[in-house]
Amino acid sequence: MTDIFFNVKKHSDHQKFLKGMELLYFGYRDFISWPDDVLQTYGFGRAHHRILHFVGRNPGLKVAELLKLLNITKQSLSRVLSTLVEKGHVRQDIGTIDRRQRLLHLTEQGQNLLDKITEHQKEHMLKAFEKAGEQSVEGFWKVLSALIADENRTEILDRVNKDMGE
View 1 (cartoon, one colour):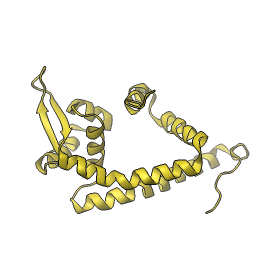
View 2 (cartoon, helix red, strand yellow):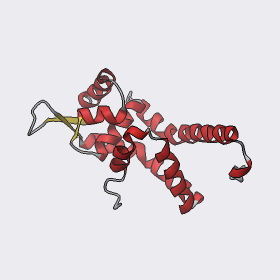
View 3 (tube, one colour):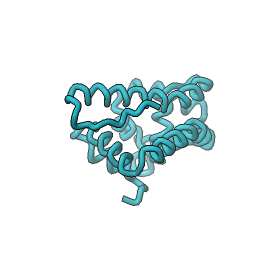
View 4 (cartoon, one colour):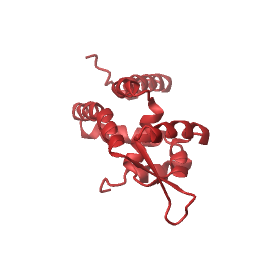
């Protein structure tokens, strides 16, 4: 493996940007390739994966909250969510306090699919974390956190840290 871990201080801002951008792109490409292949066998794509992930991580998530999290239009969400509901992967319950609300839950089938598509990703990420070391993982998390827009960083980080003991 080529050693890309160099002295950051000796590189220009532009070089740092290019290396960061390209590593983020290639890392994400390889991280998402396994789920893409599995999802394709179901006729699903990355949007379906994101919904499965966030609904699985937040049972009872309101449709409005999911829209805000994913930062997509109602029309985009409706198309993808409808497919997941029709195929039995997501269940929509009516809110108990406000009957206009739709609360989202994964079905057993949806949880099984999510487990299947994240199994390889978990292994891939944990191997990378082990290889990089704890200090690098914390640095990676700090960089990713800093990339989140200021106006919703706190809300997103609160959600990400939910159930993490922090």
